[in-house]
Image (spheres, helix red, strand yellow):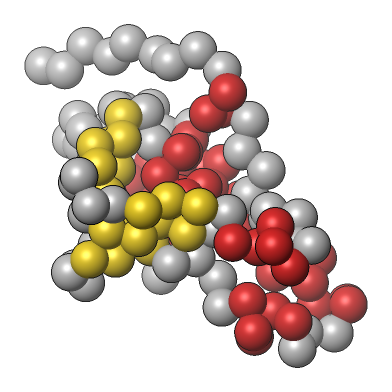
Length: 124
């Protein structure tokens, strides 16, 4: 669902800014279901992680400013989703983390953008 929305936004020249937020109070994005991932066969993990990586990188490379409105939990892939955005605005009660590292799982998105310098955009 998110990948289809991102694909549509890539080609919409009328969009000037994108705000990513949750409709669930107190949760921005909880990431992937790690119990489900633990049950996956090894041959399924690669394609699953690749799909996540593509969506996260597509968001990071959108040609317009992106804003993550973090109003609660941003865990695992949810944190990577937030980091893919140009600007992150978090509520004072927001909590962020990489819970997958406690399970010796390498984060799926492997986002490089968050460690680099930010970009400035002119909003018309």
